[in-house]
Length: 199
Image 1 (cartoon, rainbow, N blue to C red):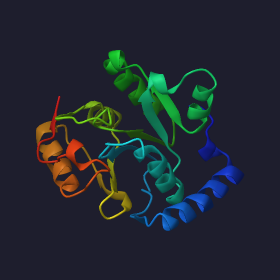
Image 2: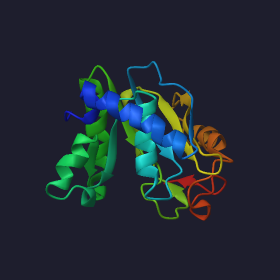
Image 3: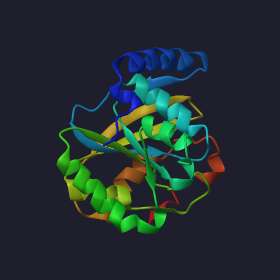
Image 4: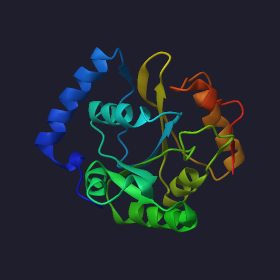
């Protein structure tokens, strides 16, 4: 895996301090604690705005998480792409979703510690279905799913719970969906946990 800002002790500590101050000044607070598990998939929802990215990073720094996150390839142009990778980014070719799931599973098997953020919506636009890649990555790698959230209504972000997938995706997704009921994204009309299904 790439060397990232989270692996740089001095910069990481500086960013944590700045993140705590920035969140406080913006009226945000952080709930939950960093999972003790060495490996897990972290889903971040709802994803309805470009603001989700900087706020999520600040919450990760506040919780002392060492994370990688997946983003579409257009976010990784020359030069800027290097910065995005240093921030933990992994470019994703959406046309190769199956290969991405398997390669991520293999990455979990090859590393003693690994946290990968996967936005289940796959886009900040309005969606009616969640992509199931995050679920199959976690189940295939035998790791839990951390339920991360940003609630713009309450200005609270964090990790609410760890969920261990059973293999029954329909039943498991219902439990996960119930967790996100009542959580409000930056653009509420683009996320409704009651209508989210998987595909």
